[in-house]
Image 1 (cartoon, rainbow, N blue to C red):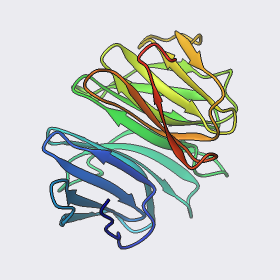
Image 2 (cartoon, rainbow, N blue to C red):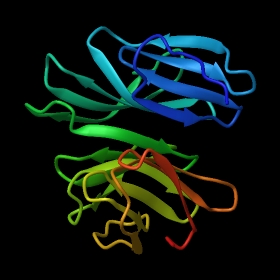
Image 3 (spheres, rainbow, N blue to C red):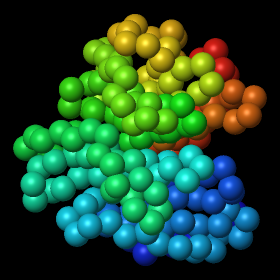
Image 4 (cartoon, rainbow, N blue to C red):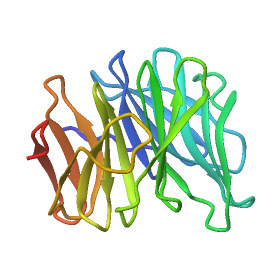
Length: 211
């Protein structure tokens, strides 16, 4: 195992198509080479941003961040050179961090609003808001990951992993129960699911059917 320290606390991490790693760190994103874990570049954000999550698809950078002083949470679409070029969604609330994690592919961008318990889905092509998925059965939706045939969402305190179709519905296709504080989530090329379990200090390996 190899470990490299980031400059500050890393709130979200994602893998890119060109074998790099994005680390969301307060007012910047660090881009690391996946082959040797060397820092490739740093992208800065305007002062006051606290970046939670980032996903790079091609040249499109999608991020979620919070303005703590203004009590705003924002979903942005841009590039590594201009990360806040387009605002996809903005929420204003005294809790400030309503929007947490994000996932993106060539068709969609999905971000979690844990206060309103919704998953907001945008077009990755024209940046339009398409629809919301209601996460009404969750205590606090947290991690999100788009798959080829749907979207996965973790419920951090509830201990569940749910898969939804990419449509404005509120009923999951299936639910995997009994996880302990599930947070980050990813799939491999075969569709198998990997979930970080904060409560058990482990990574859970789950089948594409949720078993």
